[in-house]
Structures are given as structure tokens and as C-alpha cells.
Image (cartoon, rainbow, N blue to C red; front, top):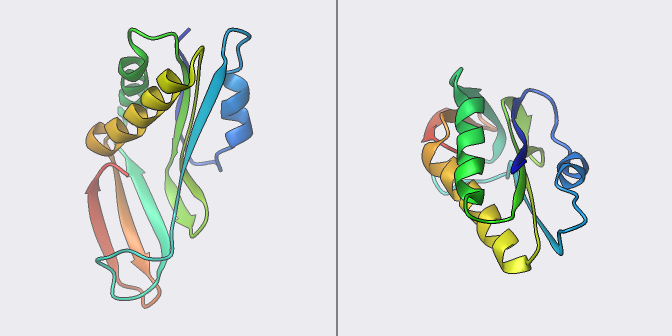
Length: 141
């Protein structure tokens, strides 16, 4: 099974859960990526205090397709989740773990998963600044 987790969740994300999901005795490499809410944005006039993520009802199926496509033609195993709801600075919005026999493949697949999420996943975010200003930030993460 190439994709072991592909989840849209309102619950906090666990990197350990994702690493455990891709554990395999054939894997010589495990790469991870955690996308976190940061306290600034080039377009923000004030400090960013939160991001509010909203997902299309088909987002979880889209996430599964993204993970499958990234791993296609490789021996990589993928676990990926995207959080929705209101996230404070420092919280994980995206967690990805990829295992593979070789490190290069694990890195390539992990990077393709996050880049495809940014391009294709029907998840939108509203940025909340300290002064209460909000701004929608389009499709993706």
C-alpha cells in the first residue's frame, strides 16, 4: 500500500503517527515535512496570530490522489495529513512522512507531495493578524 494515511483533520497532527505509518523494513530512508503556522507574512501589516483553514468536501480524496501520484513509479510509502479549523502560531498545518529504500527517492516524493498540495488541494486559508485584520490566501497551503 503506497498511501497509508491521507487525511483532512480538525485534530492536531502527530508527526510520530505519520512516521510509524510509513515504517517498513525495506525502507532505508524516512523523510518528513511539517508545515507550521508562522507569526508573519510578507503581505501582513501586523503580526499573524492564526490561520483558519477550510476544505472542500472532496479534499481528502484529492489529498489521496496527490500522494498516490507523487509515489507513482517508486517504492515510496506516504502518510500525509492537512489540518483544518483555526490554528495558532506554531501549530502544524501539514504533516508528511515518506519512506523509501533510498534517500533521494524519499526526498523527491516528499517534496512533490507538498508542492502538489500547494498547487492542487482544495483547502483555503484565512490569515488573522493581531489587529483583527483578515485576508483569504487562495487555494493550497
